[in-house]
Length: 302
Image 1 (cartoon, rainbow, N blue to C red):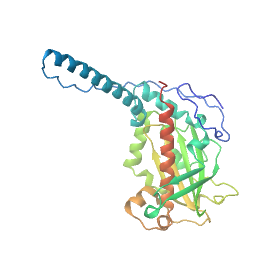
Image 2: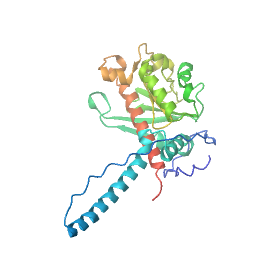
Image 3: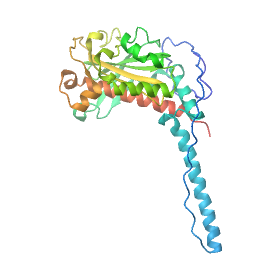
Image 4: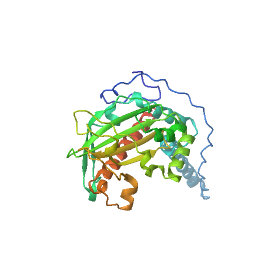
């Protein structure tokens, strides 16, 4: 496994790398112009007596210094999270996030146990246990051909996947991270398309599961898919997805998109069984871990 890029300090976790990981060179991306951040206007200081005026100037200078440091720090920390497409910090954050697939321990992106406080039906707590991690790979064969075609404009640099089971071992969920080759504009365009065309609700664009032999997910196949979600991030070159099914290998004839089903209060079997909650809850927490790790990795040492 290659050493981390200079701008991305190696994570502190001692967890093992992704199985099957091989070195992968970083892909250059053109610099993109970005307008300078406007400086907030400072209100005029009222006229005062000479001594008071001098004291006022000292206080005002100190306040301006604090505000200036705060604005600069906030801009640096927020550039990755805001998805801005220009500036050295934004470009650096995108590059750092793109390299996370081979520079971040598996347990950081896919924790052995995920706790979902209030993530189940009726606000019940959920706990999911990882049963297997797939070797990092390309997207061909791991994604449905139609979904692969939709993602073609942003490319696929690498795909990471892991499968979890719930506390009762009756539901299984595969969560995936597609690290793309795109810049911020291309990711924004793809996200807009997903939204405008409701691509996340189409069951012919469901992600494929990752079955793990010798576990409750051993028979988790395409026909067992019951609920799913696909998120196109704009603050990182990553597509996050999850797909959930029953561990007993029953066939599901009417799978439900997790986000829409929960928003509309559907009562279909996947919802009643909590599978839509599993799909959404696991994707939410893996996405948060990705953002947190990338944001931490792009901070410059003081």
